[in-house]
Amino acid sequence: MRPPSTLIFLASLALFGVEVVTSLEVEEPGPSKEAGLWNSCHGVREEAYAIRNEGYSAVNKADEIREQAYRAKDEALEIKEEALEIKESVLEGRLALETTLVETLALMKTQTTVNNLYIQEMRATLSALAASVESLESKAEERATKLDNKIEELQDKVTESVAVAGKVGKRQEVWMSEIRLISHFKLTEQNNRHAQGYDSDIVVDGQFLFATTTSGNMRPYSHSGSSSAGNKLVVKLGGIFRVHKIKLWNTRDACCMSRLIGLHVYADGRLIGTVIQTLYTYDFIVAEEDAVYAETVTVKQPLATALHLIEVQVWGNGPFDRDDIFA
Image 1 (spheres, rainbow, N blue to C red):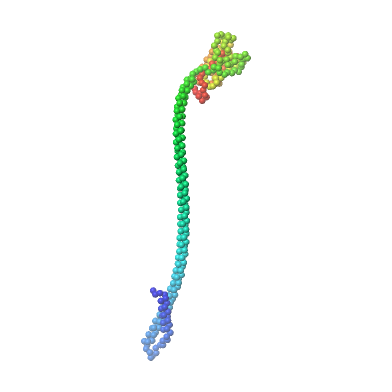
Image 2: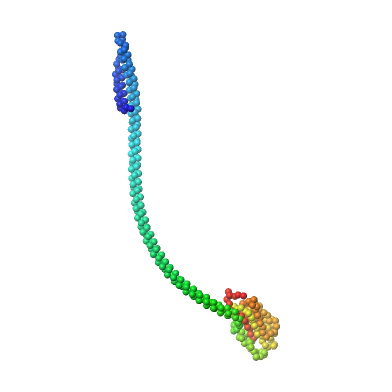
């Protein structure tokens, strides 16, 4: 394809030639001229008209191409502007990226420095902790050694104590199993004292032997102050004892021995027996399978008669703690 400028030139040249040709006046042939010449001129004219029309078409085509060129130029300018904008954006993005990269590198460097400092601090702390742990382990070993020594000493002492306790236990078993007199010289009290003496302490003094049966020459004996009902005498054992037997010694005066009939004998609040006949002595035995523990022994006469006794003997073993009482 020829360039638009060439086409415009040719079109202009053709139009000029056509104008020249068309401006010539061709006379119709007369009788004296040749018909061939006229026809030749007429053909040239027709060809000029055709060339002119082609020139007009070429001019129009050139105008269209020129418009397209202008539009292409404008589009090229727009593309160039967009390219410039894209370039500026790329440059700005690159600058921002470089700035961010620099800041990131600086931050990473700063963070690395901080991390290094933190790591150093942690190492120092761990070193201090390790030293403390070693010190504590050393102290713990020393204390453990001391504790082991103390435990060994305590074990030795426990062994000795167990051996001693075993010996003491055996002695206690023997002593506790021994039935003995547990009322001798214990505290007593009575609710109806005699004006001339005959106190209740006489019944635990151990003096129950005599050479005569007359009241004036007998061993000392206890006597109530009157013959009212409810005369009572109490022997305080001084602890919890297991009672096996209670023995009463009656007077030898024939006039008064029967006054003990109806007498009740108690170990604390439990009734052990009752006097139902006249005897010199009374043995109230507690069955082995029916253990009785008491802190006091009481004799009480519910009848309206005097209460007199030479001796009250309580036989048993103990004393016991309340938690150690067993049947």
